[in-house]
Length: 424
Length: 167
Image: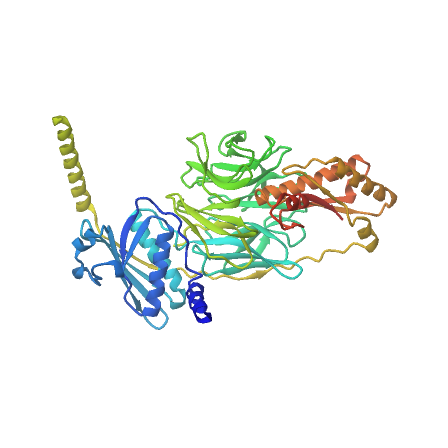
């Protein structure tokens, strides 16, 4: 009995980092034959597995691997396109992993269109052996953009906060990881809470709120050097940082007169401009991708609702944009500006919801009881958010094409994911 | 009937010619790139030492916590009872300075809850000022939902977490 138990456990343990739970995908996926890469098996197995997971996670592909194919060609001449067509396959991907020298390796891959019987892409990615994961993500993104016409996000990163309970206090960590949750690295450790992580538009800096001095303060930290500073010196608490798309401004919530109001800090000259002025709570500011609008949560109607201010209009007044329900908060604009993603309370549950500006109703996207902190991928196709279930919190994702996935569980609580810009 | 057939034929012709144009225009994509290797540095925040209150003050405020309804910062009559006794202690001892720390339950968004905790602490501060306490003796801060005292996911735990602690 014992032996059987171990056998069942080991495979799960090995793949704990990589396995993704895809609950639902697109109804009309691209069907691709993903042939195993040629090269050293120890490395190609990992490359194959990562590309497979990256593409699966988008929800837009149906992947056919070697064992289900009638043949496994390793070059163009060997491809019998009709054979692939019979299996309903649209594209064929094949590649090879080679060492360039002692410290460098490269992956060359080709994509074929089965219908036109033509090679549509030939690409080469250079990398190093201990960054084989990143190399694989680059290949996934090349495949994704070639077939869908949209830039891929497998090579992007996410920030999040973890809280690990220790004997008397909690350890808080600000973590950066690959978009699939692997390759975690700690940016900041603290025994006081860290909240509200945000990327600079060039993804080289992060802003966040740390309680290390006893009250909430916004810090800006350089990822590569670890150099950090408070965004602006002030005796009152400051929170909720959000970078303008051009990187020149940081909107924040300041508590100068006791109440939460939104200010815009010019990062070049440290000038502050007050954006809101109301006795109710105003917080959670976020910018539209063109930098012309700021959305925020305000309690001015008696319950938290989303409002927006047009920045390029003289004396612009906040306009309310959510009306359904008594709790709509932490909004972010879709990348194309067509709508917003936010946290919506339905009965007693908090869900992630979507509202298109040309529709007068909202679309709940999640089913759990306590979902929060939605963040949108830089290509606009995927939303990552935090789920709390049975007192545990972890990260989940959904794509606008209908796929849902869950990032591997970590120790402690995981929350407040924030998606980087494109890094490739 | 003939007109429909005609349409189909036209559609087919159109699609066919469109595909021909596409395939004749399409050229193969050739790319070459290198994996970006950004470094990362870990930083440890040095947490400020919180100055401990003297024993006497601690004893006076040991149970001075007031509670709130969901998404509300209004004082309840029970809260006012608690605050009344704090005011009388402060009036008897001119040297006491207090910190009001506002908190929220885990429901709703973190930043809104941080602001809500602040509003709760400000409500308590307003009460003290109305009752003759000098505002310089009262400082205010919020922990939002970050420091729960009860960890359950039920209304009883939530109601314990929606609070202002007086220290």
